Image (tube, rainbow over the protein chains, first blue to last red):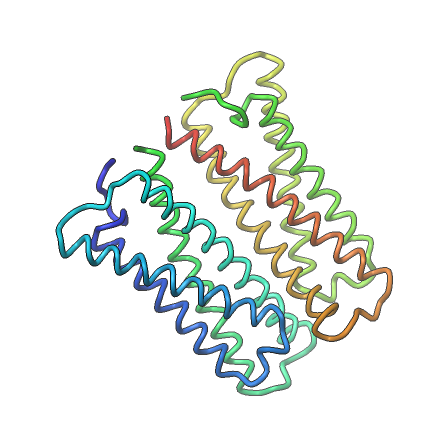
Length: 152
Length: 152
């Protein structure tokens, strides 16, 4: 198994995981501080999906940090397979959550001619944008992990 | 390059492509026959994304059929790389389109307490369901293609 940038136990891998965590947590913070998110199934789903993302990415960041501290690369094929499956599942859920929330945000902003609840709307948009950024970073991680596994 | 089920130039690969094409075309048909889809950005995006899916899958189905007729496997690494990138792009666009449309459909059905335009609503739901089925088949193809490329 080759040891290139982004594989588990490298600094790039750790940074990617921390960014996923950060963007997902910021997305939750932005969405959960609005007063009416629970009226929208998609927004509640966004919070659930980003919550899962935070837990998953934080766990893997911790694993990466441990491997870096011990200077030992994590190249157990069984562990890598498990991370690959988890990465793909969370990446798919994040994209679905970000897209469905984006669909509703665009519906309110463009199609129905402006959003009526003022400041809330900016928070919705911010949460969706952060969710997409979280998806981009988890997508990069997933591709690298899948490549690591397949090239083994 | 191994020649397992689903790689380009196999019967399984051809069947997967034909299903992608069929589901995407049915989704367009269901959505485009409603009277008000153009009022929703997400629904218009669904039609555009499914249109791209039909073109892409039909082209690859044609390629598979040619390879089957000539009994020659398509294992040119350059061509496979191109198909992998195209597959991932269309799969991501399909999932995003299906999710954003699903977000709006659920908003109208559950959150706002029932859909007001009768028969139209069933067509929206059908289009979203077909888009998800198209996404599942393109997802399977993408994974197989990526694996083929990486295991090469």
